[in-house]
Length: 315
Image (cartoon, rainbow, N blue to C red; front, side, top):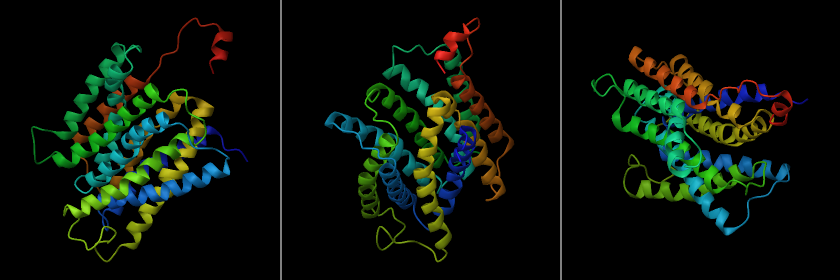
């Protein structure tokens, strides 16, 4: 039985909203870099299997793969590593809140890479409101109440990397996508090559908590963290990509990217209810302000007086 796109949309919000919880559990027995590496390995295995089952193919052309090297770094390697490493220092709910900064970064990057596309006053207002929300979450006037500065900087950079990456895709990879799971599979393949290098360098530089090998775990209760990261890779990195593309095809990219809003809410709820994390009133206010900024940036008002026949052709 075919599942309506609304059901897939809700599933994506739950899956990606819970990814911050799963990463937080994972770092109890692994470093953030280990979490990101295992996530990539599990995710690429699922995506390659789905690509084969759907009879898809990977992109072709040296130039295309050159751009995929950039997008794979920006959309996979950097954010997944920084989110996991950052959650060693900040709560999962803080990491989830930072995800709402992605539309703000997208607008700023579009001003550089997509100059032909007008930004508009409403989106610029959204950028300004977004910065205000970040300041409320960080609370630079109170070191004791705000999140860890380095950890918060990491998760903010990870969220911004998504915005830069998707803008780069629109600028340089528009028109070369074979469709289906081709592009996401290729991007995760890039991360699959990069993450082992990052992991070995992290261990060699002595930042691995004195573990014996790059794949060693710390602590004795490692089963639940290990299962959590495997679930993060299989479901959150593999299956969710498939669902996301189905939503894009059925409801359009604007609706599909709006999933950022419920993801933020789900991540905060899970952090508070499951992990017992606490968010102060100023941090919550900052999260609401950032969400408002995301809505201002992503909201597309309907044009009045548009003929019905013309509207139908654009659905």
